Image 1 (tube, one colour):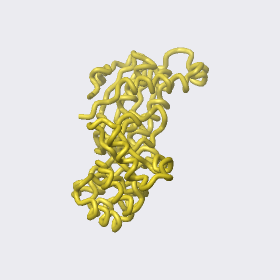
Image 2 (cartoon, rainbow, N blue to C red; image 1 turned 60 degrees about the vertical axis):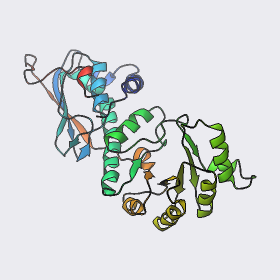
Image 3 (cartoon, rainbow, N blue to C red; image 1 turned 30 degrees about the vertical axis):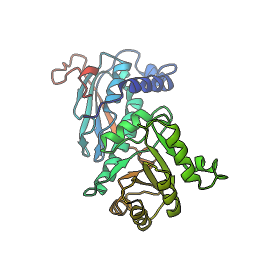
Image 4 (cartoon, rainbow, N blue to C red; image 1 turned 120 degrees about the horizontal axis):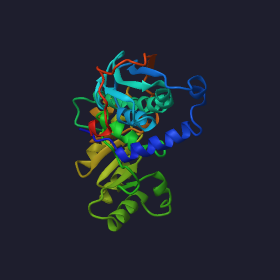
Length: 304
């Protein structure tokens, strides 16, 4: 079970509602001066992996705690075209105020989870881990990385504080030294805690040799072809874990997995995932309608 980042979700909702309702919803206020009982359903319009439902539920509750919610799918579950994910009953004015923010969370995060699942399915049968990166929307990293987990992927570093990853621009600052890759790895090993892995990004087989000389824990092969990855793995001989990254797509990820790396990191999971297609369908209700078929859902009842 993947726990939602509750504190980050609450913070994101607060900021999103402040952004979308700085002075209220003037259209709804102008059209409906009094309560307008309504029933709404959030419906998938494609096959997808659900992600962000916890955020959508909390958005409706933040706007109006009296809304009655019925959850039909949980985060991490599959949904097909036409499936209802969430049903909402109550004042239609409140539903309209929360609609866009709730859908934004669901569409964006379900898109990430769905794309991640496609990558994981593409490498099925190979002992390789699909990783995300730090290429995330500022302020939404925790939610985006949660969606990756829901899609079956694995999180790379959450932040710069989580591990040592020596990249091209670190090496650029060492370009006047002899063998920058080896020098960087040795400095990192000397100055870091023993519990922290040292990852170094390399672009050539020569740099693979320097990374081995520097005793890197993980060697990240950047923008290499599957054939070159195989050569690098033969050089490494199990002395370090092998990660590949750069230019990974659904078309080539299986060939890359077949080359034999331990990990494949894909920035596109979070920076290029297309939003999932969902819609909120709303209909008016008679004032006296009873909610016998629905059940009020509190935050604590969501799967964590």
